[in-house]
Length: 421
View 1 (tube, rainbow, N blue to C red):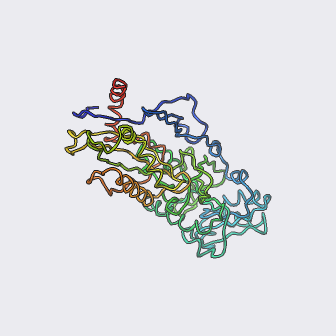
View 2: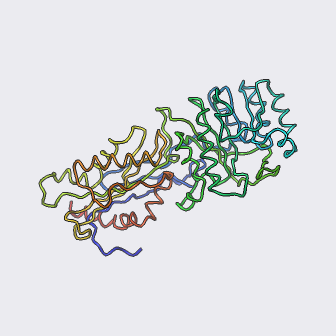
View 3: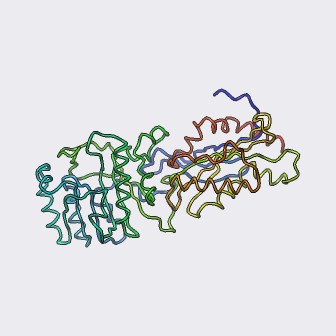
């Protein structure tokens, strides 16, 4: 890479060291544990925590067997009703009430799907507590169930009935979450299965992430956390391709996404967290200034003070990292002082990460820092990035042009610091 014709005073980047040659048995098998090494200290922050609940394939009927006692399940948009028929007996044996629903009215459903009558009868026969409902719009659930809540709400392979279009499918997910969250019990879960790569959490690049449905982003907008991802093994008849009784391809490894409301206790594993990032540009005191001790100034330069201030302005359930920073000299910027640039990353650990909330954290941090140091005027009040999965942070640091400059000069600055000391 061609270097900038400037002399950086201080640049520290996120360096990655793989310390395990064994992939973790999880849907995120392409990611290994790694450490992030900072020059002044070793900051251990594994990007992949053990995800016991996402380590195996799940059949369509087995996922609820692993959970605490639940009383009822609502299945939305169930094609020819074969999914609900496949779990109806299991639910009955566990004392779980099953409500199977489809968008079509009963007459249309019977006409379109060859197994409609058979599956309906099978569900109702399994338990007097089970029911089959027609004409249920998954984006208008409170209208259909004004006085009910459910411990599980399931929507398998949601898709726009017309020609495939990301815009319409994203809108469908957004409307579904907005609707379903009102019917979810306090400790309930929403389960959504998607075709391989649709959800976005397996994305290895920003381009792949943008080309996905970004399901976690739309769930977060309605107060939901992505607490797990399972590999999903459909063992029922896949139907309802664009409103017809026709199967569809789900990819080799479709995923089951699990969402819940925050409970104030549990933390989401890093690999499932959504993050937003900002660049904080700080004017450092004049080199001959006596306002700050050299020790405090070094803390600021290396990001320790910035990290502490950032943590002080966010809720406890939001984690903060400062994985990269650099110093531009007066000669480089034309400012009367050196400029310190910090990459600040906010992640939803116990609360959903929404861009609006992250922008509020950004504003608070700028106000906090400005009490001590001046901010670069033309870099203030800029919106944070759109949410992205934590798994993409290392990729962003590698390929982003401005962060790349931090990385390029890391070893130069490391050697310089060692020489000074």
